[in-house]
Length: 332
Ligand code: SAM
Ligand code: SF4
Image (cartoon, rainbow, N blue to C red; front, side, top):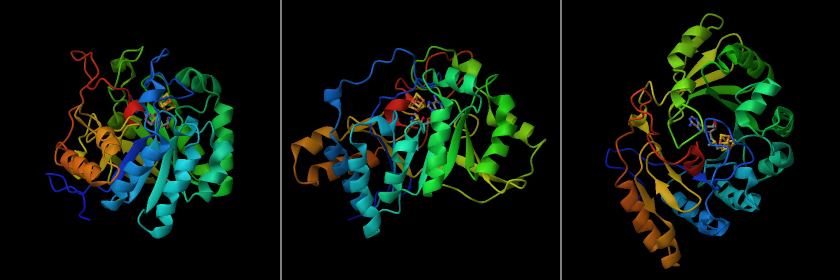
């Protein structure tokens, strides 16, 4: 079957799937404390999510990332992961990964390995117990550290994601780099993106990563490397630790020209761009037609509408989020 190529000649080979919008944490930049989640009835079943993933795999998508919300809080999610893992064995899928807050990794890491998952991204914004508790609102640092330990022991490769928050964790970055070096983790810094209403002013949180990088260069030797993930991160290698640092800069640098991904929500909406509101309904075609013809047509039509890029702005004149939905709807 023909590959998915968008109107700008970009090959879509990467699907990110938000398997739930729910989470056991309430990170301050991601959610408000009193979130209204989608009614459970609106959700695609795990079988339906799998069917859509399978259709994408048939069209040449070779990398899948499960995210959320917190993917590991969805009931029976391991069944989905196990079934998707079968495509790794056939070689149709090159990689199956997860982005998780790590709180349930101690429980699931070994099963993840068994299903063929080899790498996970774990979000961790502070190594200080009290700060971690305040940024996640409901989280406990020791759960995540335990999860990371187990994950490493069973052989999962780990990348830490840290959102750079002005006045909150900026004085911890040197410590985090050293800790990641010791633990053998890569690290990615992320700029806050204006997605969904939260309880705080995003302008107060926003810390441009070029400022972060300048300050890191006082303590660390950062070597430019050609490594690219086909995504928004730009990577350097830290000479002192030998580990990579990525910078995800949606605001201060536009990275859309080599975008290879689309995002599916747990209700079957396909977002062709993280920073735009346009989406395609895959749930109706999925339920209308037990063969895959209609869903394939819907996917083709959607990819034909993939926009050139986004234009996130955070400044004092723009107080509303650039897109209304929270990151937990489309996944990070
Ligand atoms: N719950 C999982 C986790 O925290 O890793 C997966 C979903 S979470 C939405 C995915 C990533 O998005 C996390 O690394 C999180 O820090 C990041 N994120 C959430 N809201 C964000 C925002 N407004 N701007 C930038 N990154 C955000
Ligand atoms: Fe949950 Fe992840 Fe959002 Fe934090 S960033 S509230 S862990 S979905």
